[in-house]
Picture 1 (cartoon, rainbow, N blue to C red):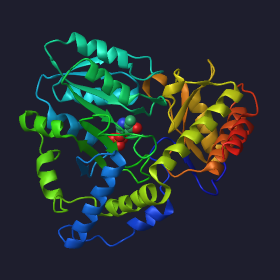
Picture 2 (picture 1 turned 30 degrees about the vertical axis):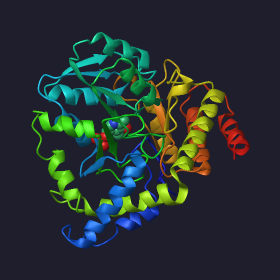
Picture 3 (picture 1 turned 120 degrees about the vertical axis):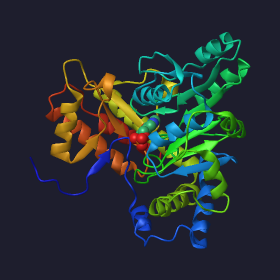
Length: 390
Ligand SMILES: *Cc1c(COP(=O)(O)O)cnc(C)c1O
């Protein structure tokens, strides 16, 4: 096995590459989180975060991975035995459903084939049939990171509205925030669940809830126990720039830096366009190789990652291992139901054309080295597109 040289290519769909300037921003003495200097930092960050979620509502920050913010969304708003509607779009939707079960909710989990997003018509039909409004919440994963499929959140919102149903609407944007357009207020979402380690280009360790007025109201009558996750003390302390417990101080320095990059320097619309362009270039490479994209619905292609199927009789994890050993690049594994059947290319976060070119070169050389049948020319197809769509 060759000794790895040069920079490791971390092309999994999260955690993503952390820009050097974000790492440098963290390299600071820890400060007193009860000082006025710290309060200024918090207030500045909360203002920026609201712009990223596109909301004027409250956003709270947990020193936790995304899973914590999943639990927080449910524990703050719902009560034991409440019925909720969820959709099996992939591994992450399944994990969130597991948390709902653990918390004592009654989950209606609509089966899926992991190759398409949530069908808005199905949401409308299911909610229209629920005349007595037994369903208290609808949960959807915006960008299903295990499959590279994005659900159409604004259309799903419209479906809920068309059904005239009062259920809360909760959306996981852990792998879309800061890479795919998302609008908490405009799309009428009640709780949005975000994380730090994907589009926001930070190390793992922070997660978020954006909270509508309706969700905040629901939290006053929820009976699921919550203490660490409880929104009320968090929102109260945040008003003056403080936290009810010790925040992840140095990750907040990092967040200030990445918000500056996304909002002030590149601009969110350019960030989204960059991701769409890299997604399209990647898919052109996949088609030229003669391989199959897992996502079946073109309007649901993820701009953040692409999941690619290997031909029957071949093992995607063996391909990933060859690529890691030979080219020092990590690609995403196939999770649970698609293990060994797919590998995933992350093209989100701190990323550019030449990083994509290098990534695709590693895949094309890896396919040959792993003995997987494919057609040459994927890299050229991608580069032609990048050149044309400069
Ligand atoms: C990464 C991810 C999660 C899980 O977050 P953790 O930080 O691992 O707890 C949840 N949902 C989606 C869509 C993700 O991509």
